[in-house]
Image (cartoon, rainbow, N blue to C red):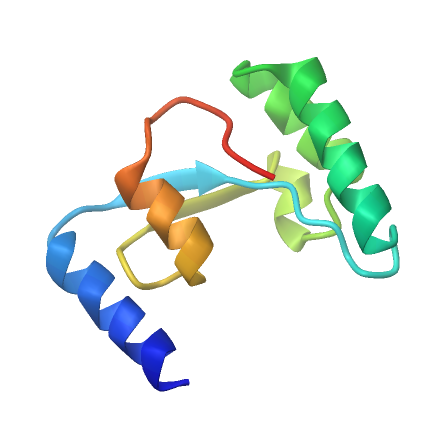
Length: 101
């Protein structure tokens, strides 16, 4: 718990004033067992490459998140507002590229 707080504070400090927009595909535990979910995400990633239109279509079809109706779009957010792994990708990795799983 304490490390999570420091991760959030650290991201907010390092990325002060930055904003990100991102989309995601999120499976609910009821959709697939974990090993099948990872394999399906790799399959989807291979199919869409870095094409934002294909990503949005895949999110609408597969994501279990309410954002699916918006092509997986999470809108704009600041550092420390998402879980650490997602925050790290959004604020430290190449933009315009599909990352994960």
